[in-house]
Amino acid sequence: MSTQILSYPTAINNNNHGERIKRLKTDHINHPCLHINRFNNWCIWCGKTLDEPMYLPHNNVNSQLHNPEVNSLLNQKKLYLVLDLDHTLLNSIRLANLGMNEEYLKDQTISSLFRLNKIGIITKLRPFVYRFLQEANRMFELCIYTMGNRTYALEMAKLLDPENEYFKSRIISKDDYPERNKKGLDVLKIPESLAVVLDDTEAVWQEHKENLILMDKYCYFSSSCRSFGYNNCKSLSQLKEDEDECDGALANILRVLTRIHHEFYDNNCANIVVRDVRQVLKTTKQEVLRGCKIVFSRVFPRNYDAANHCLWKMAEEMGAICSNEINSCVTHVVSVDVGTEKSRWAIREGKFLVHPRWIVAAYYLWRRHSEDKFPVKVA
Image: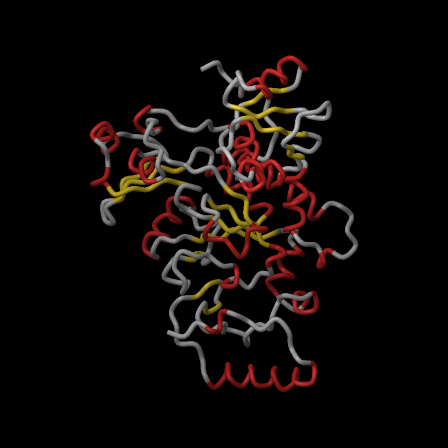
């Protein structure tokens, strides 16, 4: 099946503008859409709608002004929130993959645990997810976007939104998007400047990293832990524990989303159409570790280019300044060994000496944590 209609042109020749409009309208009338996969009454495959011609490109201000979806969002003071399912809002596995010490879950009565026999899976919703959706819905138009198939996506939507208040028909599955192992905002009628993405996997959003809030993976079941290489720790189900309801990943991200929404709409910007949520995301993240100057000690492999390491990049994204040299301006030494020269210097000079997890925690929860909670322990 052809998918070229998913890539709209980014510019229109003014000389051919009227002719193009006429051609689009004629094409819509003479060749009605016969596809079955629709999103907000818009066909994902050919771009046509049930009640109006194809939309013109929306990558510029003028086209945004004439896009009813955009106008509706702006009038309601809402943005668009694209939500991944697996390991972001929930964790699902096949019943056959339950471990021996997880068999108790088959008969356990847990309010956020669901056994779906007709599709052979068991699903655990992430703590705080119902409250998260309720509050996020006040600020965002919510959309599910999953690599799972459509049957699975619809079943998960029923668990998350039993009254169909939040998602409506805004559900995208792998059956609706032609490229495997990749997700794209081009299937939406919403400009990228208004879209925020929550997902635990960065690799699938290579073309939309500036829209992404990367979530800490929710791995409730042991098989999920193993699939991501967490082999040396027990899963939440094995520990019979769960994330904190009020200070877990979703609760923290809700606070971030609230701030982003506030910055976008409540900064007295005269022309809201020219605002870009990607810039808001960038500046908000840069505030997390602003004012911190960080030196790493024995964290990277020998002869490794430190500036290319993920921890270095994470710190810089959050507004920190990273350096290879210690001096009086350094505020933090990040290490796993208290015995290194730089670690001893930090202790001697009264600087913060923290474990690398301090950076990771700040990155995923978008806030600076108390350094005391991430000590470098003596081996």
